[in-house]
Image (cartoon, rainbow, N blue to C red):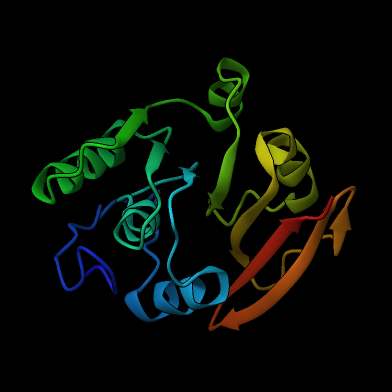
Length: 178
């Protein structure tokens, strides 16, 4: 797997090879960033179910200033850290926590939150409600979910602005509208 564009373009990212994660393939990741960017002038991102860290690393490569990577699986965060070390990324932080525990411990907000939870976790509205307070006033949520999962078109100030399918995966992009 490789970084698609930006500062780290074509650099290799190690995959997790874990049963608990699924990687966002290069073509889908490129399409997602074309929907939300494709490049940024600073800002912060949270990769809440990070796996190998591919989404957060792609965001850093494209100009996001700082990313926090979180995953409940220690091996996934170890691979994310190794990927960041190999790319000489210093503007990243890491945690190994259940997403709810992580959010309870922080008071930060992010410009982009990447959500790619296990497909068995199919309560999209509940997850969006949980992360909503952590999105900046003009921030976005990028949510990868199983194609059959039900999802809201809006949730308070959060509005669905993009909806694309890629095989068995649906990618939703929500934006805070104030």
